[in-house]
Figure 1 (cartoon, rainbow, N blue to C red):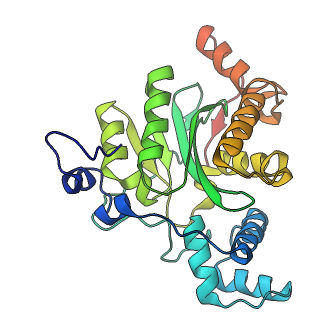
Figure 2 (figure 1 turned 180 degrees about the vertical axis):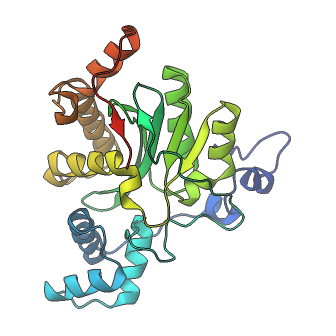
Length: 283
């Protein structure tokens, strides 16, 4: 997203416009040790089961499994993975300094049709010798994944790329819901939504259930795909995620959709203007 040879804007100016630190443009990750990568895999698996585990609980859990770890180490790894426990506490999902947050708009809202509400989130993808991050944009009503991107950093640019693709293919939604992470409070993300006339909704701090449908997507993806493999490269990871996303959208039966796959319901309800039989009321 940042052009080092831009004719008018310096790298510093571009970073400022995108609400990212200039140092991050030059940053080259050193990588993690094999032991830390193993710990991150275990943390990720446990977090799916107990998303309320903070640093202290996760440290105790790993110690009970025989790992000699301290809280400082686990805090660093959980921050690196972008994990946020669901209880109220200052955490890694807080917005960056100076970023505006928005209220949660979905409480009590009847979500009755495709493109009424979209949601987005980021998850951690373990590999054999490293890790990546995955962002997805989902239609709340039909659970269809509209777009996704993989990145080796948690900067906002790969999220904005996914958003641009979804809007280009399907048009803008009425509401976009995310957590309060720095990627989703960045100028690049919120400005793209505002320019498209989209109302911005953000989960309350530590409110895991506010974005529950995409959290369920991550759980399904990891147990049906990610944890069954040990990918060596980013290209292998991307190819496997693409294959699973296609399966999820077009073939995998979804219980909330009466056994139909998300893409079928999405296009049926877009092409046929009839009252929806499945209405979700957000708690």
